[in-house]
Image (cartoon, rainbow, N blue to C red; front, top):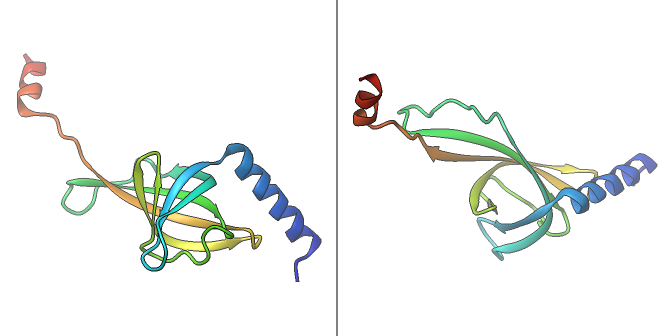
Length: 123
């Protein structure tokens, strides 16, 4: 049974998503998909995360919220595409029964300066 606080929090979460959210495509590991979503909120966290073990890519983290009515049961490995960038779900937790908070990750290649560029800059 929802409390008055739960109902109020659900309304606030929905209003924030409606006002500031954008569109996304959600691709579950199994079942129907991909799903077109609206009112998705997103923020990248730890933008300066260290490179992976071999130094060839940087691991990025993000947090998104999606409507529980649109995504029934997100699981680790599901993917969400935001602004043409694909993120992978690490964990999901419910927010006031109306939204899911998704912890996301993605890797991107590390761009290295060419040796010729470094030599030219030293002269």
